Length: 165
Image (cartoon, rainbow, N blue to C red; front, top):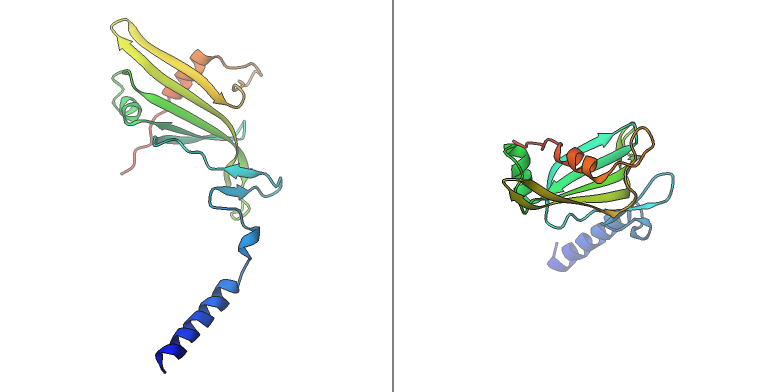
C-alpha cells in the first residue's frame, strides 16, 4: 500500500469515527454544563489560584460547598496555632443537583453564594477579620433566620482541611 492510500484510509477512518455520536453543536462548552431537568447552565467557579482546602455537603439544605484558601490559610487550619494576617478563605456554595449519568449521585448545580474571610491583622490583642458576601444571598439557619457575619467566620474557619496522601 502506498503512502497516499494509507493517508486517505486514515483520514476516512478518522472522519467516520468523529462523525459517530452526537454533534458538537448541542454540547455545552468546557466551562459549562446543562443541568438535567431545569435546562439551567452551571458555570465553573474560578478560585483565582487558591487551593482546595476541603469540600463538604449539607444534605438538609441540598448544598455542596468547597472551601478554598491561599497557602497561609491552609497552613493555619492544619497547624491550629492561630491565624495570621494575609490568610484568605473563599467558600463557594452551589445548589445540589442530580447527576443524570450516575443514579443516586449528586453534583454541584447553580452557584448560590460566594463568601470571603480575610485575615487583616494579628496582634497580641487578637486577630482582625473581615467577612464579605460577594455573590448571592446570606445563608439562612435551620430556624429560618439569616446567619450573621461573625457566625459565618466561625463556621468557615471551623472546617478541617482534607489531607491528601
